[in-house]
Structures are given as structure tokens and as C-alpha cells.
Image (cartoon, rainbow, N blue to C red; front, side, top):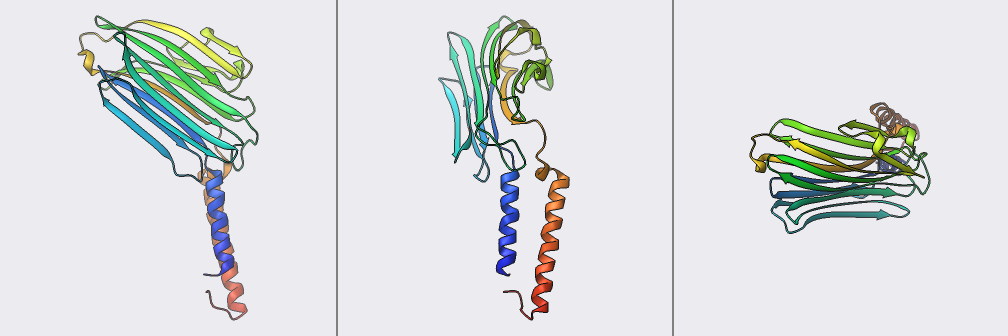
Length: 255
């Protein structure tokens, strides 16, 4: 293989690596008194960080990922514990620094942090939810906090908040209400108690409570869409063919 082709291949690999999105996410999952935590980050071209712990009763179960690379990076943290008879969950994730190829360049920070207190009361749940979301309106990134209660295959409660930099871009789904969100400059905050979530006659240990946060791009990076990847591969093939033809004309064989 010629040196030119090697350089071309390395360039293509770098385009793919820089084109991949920065990601950060954290999950806390309860099943009765048992808790599991997961944290994940991806800052190309570093290998993804994925930490999973738990599947056992507390004391405190935690997962943590931290990936700095030059002026950018990502972090994620999840925590589960039983305090005063109540289940406490913390799921937080964030990214910082210039984004990536074909994306917003700047020193923007995006994060989503949740604190959830789960209070079981005789076949019902009260859930105290606190969420803090931060994002620059120009960064093309969204912070997302989600809470759900699942029994078997049935989701009996779910809701989430999407925040992308200002009040006009904030959206909610499920049981969440945008009226309860307080907006600051580049941030949003929500505090709410969901009363009497009924899980009926089901075994409390079969009830799963899932607290989820992530920080992701709003729009796809052009180079990482299926069409963008097809274009990159096509250009690589064309360039390789041109180099091969030039070598044949000059009487050199690929080295």
C-alpha cells in the first residue's frame, strides 16, 4: 500500500472519529430494594467508558465515568441508596468544550442532573423529583431528564424534560408539566412531587423505578448520517482508484 493511500486512510479514519458525537448518560434502576447504576461517556477518538454496578441492596451503589480530551470531554455519575427507608437516586451527566467536526465550536457546557426520592406508601409511590438542566442555546445540544415506573411489560408512569438553552425550546412529555419549570440564563430547574403512583396489588419488589439522564446532539452531524458516511466511503474509493492508476502509469507497483 502506498504512503499516499495510507495517509488517505488515516485521514478518513480521523474524519469518522472527529465526526462522532460526544455523549454522556447515567441511569439508576430500582427493583424493590435492589438498585443498579450505570454511567457512560464517549469522547472520540477515546474508547467509550461504561461502568455498571449494583444488582444488590445498598449501601450506596455508584458508577462514574470521566473522559477529558484536550479542551473537551464528558462525565457521568449515578448513585443509588436507601436513606431513612426511602430510595434515593442521583443521575447526572455532562459534556464540555468545542463540539466536533461539522458541529458547533465553542466552550459550551451541557448537563442534566436529577435527584429523585422514592417513598413507598402501601401500594402507592410518592416520588420527589428535582432536575437541573444546563445548555447553551447555540450549542445544538439537549439535556434530557427522564423518570419512569415499570411493572413487568407495563409502564404505569413516565415523564421527561428536554432542555436546549431557553424556555422556548423546552419540551416535556408524559406526566411532566412545563409550567413547573423555572428558567434561568442558560439553565432550567424543576422541582415536583408526584403523589400516589398506584402499583396496585403487585409485589413491591417487582416494581422498577428508572431515573435516566443524557446529553446528546439535537441534529445529526452531517458526516455521520448514512448519506454522509456513503459520501466519505465513495470519496475514499475514488481517491484510492486514482492513486492506483497514477502508480500504474508511472510504472510503480503498490508498496
